[in-house]
Amino acid sequence: MKSISNMQLPLFFLVLLLFFSINSFAQNPEKPNVIIINADDLGYGDTGVYGATKVQTPNIDKLAAEGKRFTDGHSASAVCTPSRYALITGEYAFRVNNSYPVFSRDSLIIDPDKLSIADVMKEQDYATAIIGKWHLGFGDKNPINWNEELNPGPLELGFDYYYGVPVLNSHPPFVYVKNHKVVGLTEDDPMEYGKDAKTAPYPEKWNRGHQKIGGADAAHELYVDSLVGTTLKNKAVEYIRKNKENPFFLYFAPTNIHHPFTPAKRFIGSSDAGRYGDFIHELDWMVGELMNTLEEENLTESTLVIFTSDNGGMLNQGGQDAYSFGHRINGDLFGFKFGAWEGGHRVPFIARWPGKIEASSVSDQLISNVDLTATLAALFERDLQDDEAIDSFNLLPALLDNPSEQIRPHLIVSPGDLNNISLRKGDWMYISAQNSGGFGGEHVGMHDFGGAATLPFTGQKNSDIENGEIKPDAPPAQLYNLKEDPTQNINVYNDYPEVVKEMKADLNILRNSDKTRP
Image 1 (cartoon, rainbow, N blue to C red):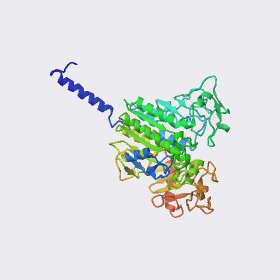
Image 2 (cartoon, one colour):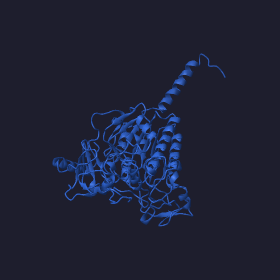
Image 3 (cartoon, helix red, strand yellow):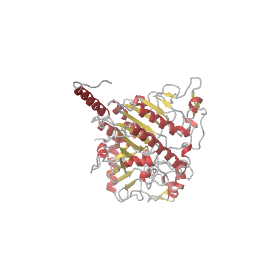
Image 4 (cartoon, rainbow, N blue to C red):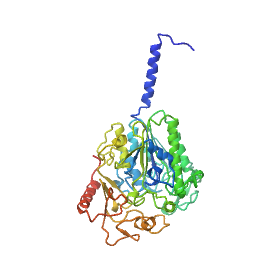
């Protein structure tokens, strides 16, 4: 090897300095990689750091220990599809009259011309991907023709790459989609509505009626329920490794812990909360595998990770089993998925960005998944126009600091029934009708067990409800002071008529305004 002459030394050190400068710029913490992990149906009480004792979530807990845990984080809807709409668009889904899930026949419910969270990142030259559950429809025709290109879809909304479950793990089609195509689909064996699917049966797996679709045996055989979590995790790890040299945005949407509860064999029996808890254990493992990959690729310091859930826990058969084991899926909160009570939409929300977000910090800021678009735009000082992410607030100050004042002055929450649409303002929560506005199953063992009927089973109390029924003299709507009554035991609607009048008027104005963001 030739030695470096004295004349060459200054040039050598200049080149070396330039190399380290370029490398430092590539890992610029002001332009971090961003991973959003949007769990499915994970309740407020489903992780150790939020109080669970019947399940162990060391990896999720570690995220909180290394970052910030929010105690007042919410999904914009208590229902999966409208919640995901809000996350992707920064807009409340009630604006497109959506308050319920889309299924096998339904086209894309997001206008491709609308700014998306992925568009914000693409503008900054990020690689963008969604891996996991989509559940927002494909194409522009009803019913969807699954044998053709599924266009428009995620790729028309700013994502470079999509691999995942097109609807959800309980409803057909039980296949994977990559970009615009069903994986494994062949021309000689097309998908057909009304036909049986070659897929494993589970009690909570629905392939019947109007939604029924089958055929495409090769495509369906690739979808093994107990391996879905592992498959999606592997795709996410592969994506991180492939894009480690340049900034990337990954929206990771596992099907855990939505029913049916089908964890990989290694997790069965691992919790003290039945298969519901076992499915949480698999989710925690997936989170750990992604975080380990960041560590192995030296990306931990340069990656903002946000972990949350699309809505609260559901009191389906698995949720009821978990309850019988002593696991409170939404902690002490009142209510469940689909409903307007807190348990339906107050969810885990954790953010980690080493060196930027204070470790082991806790915030009581009112936040929502609808705020993620404006928050990521603020990373790059990207001003949002009046017609962009119209309901999304910039919560970056709440991530990076601890503001003394609430950033969000209000939050609208949509349950399954829009007659129960609700407004949070300060300590007050106003629900515009009786009951939860969610599921109405009346008996233990029913999949859609919900609302007032659940109280004898859960042991919870509410002043409007007696023996599982709304009292005849209950007020027409609901008002709760969440500071004084976080478990919503007492409806104070009749005690504060002026607050009710103000909240009702504010909700009407906000609901009919062009936007709620300042």
